[in-house]
Length: 384
Image 1 (cartoon, rainbow, N blue to C red):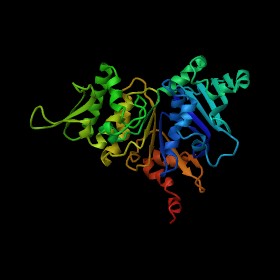
Image 2 (image 1 turned 90 degrees about the horizontal axis):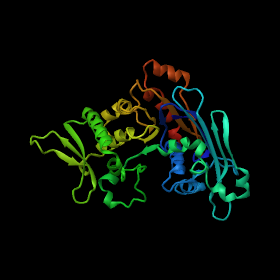
Image 3 (image 1 turned 60 degrees about the vertical axis):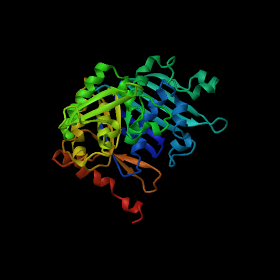
Image 4 (image 1 turned 120 degrees about the vertical axis):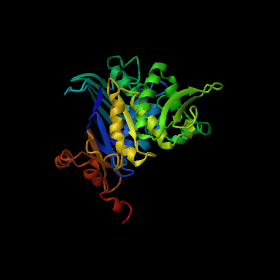
């Protein structure tokens, strides 16, 4: 199952968007155009349904409350609205449609409150809040039915879908020197690196060995003199580590631990591992960072190889403004082009025109055709 359509109103810097999606989606646009905010729509839903301390209140508060979430260009008095269609591959009609509209209390605790929550199974409406019980007890509207296991029995598949989504924006220094940083929460959803080694450690041994072997095979294509990748635990503290062996004149030499890896190598390992870790949705934010240009050019093919190693291929969202990553004219997927409006308060999302698509089918790359669109007007933004 994958997200076939997202609609959003008053979300961050998007006043109103409605986009159809594919299995692979490239999000491109200038800096500060909202690429991260678009990915955060899915991350928000993952936080809402996270059974380990998530929920609507956590999802809103962890983002700075409603004042940080609501679009500046949105009409006053209206809430934030998110709507998703979830479909099975090859089926024209979505299996599920989920809509959540919420706002903030104007007094008191100023909590987020549900204005509307709807669930459709194909064309059948099976939940339509607020219910009579909600109106009688407004406290109920501080929680979505989606996050409550006693209430989401009929549509728990939606909650489980978002729970399994993964986000990766690894910061190598957090992984190399985790003892210097205080993590608020280290869990399997940690996107920045402090919990990455714990993710690997928590995987069953059989699965871990298989994934590391597949990762090793991919790394050998792009890292000179690389020979072997392995997972070990410190014999005293039990701390998990990754080790890599490079070609060396001494048979047992050439081993390095993750604190000696280059930033690019760490990001590449995390990228490949993440692509093997979910059957649902994977969000990759600027995966080209710290990587050599020649490796970035190969990323679409490497991603396809990593995804192809799974029985069920995950849906992938990739935010980028890298010409190298988009230079391969064999890239297949959906392109979402973020275009900030002149006043800077809102961003529109465009998709390639028919002439754009025709040019790419004829052999031109997305870097040639689509990236120039994202640089239009930048001179005005910087005062030129």
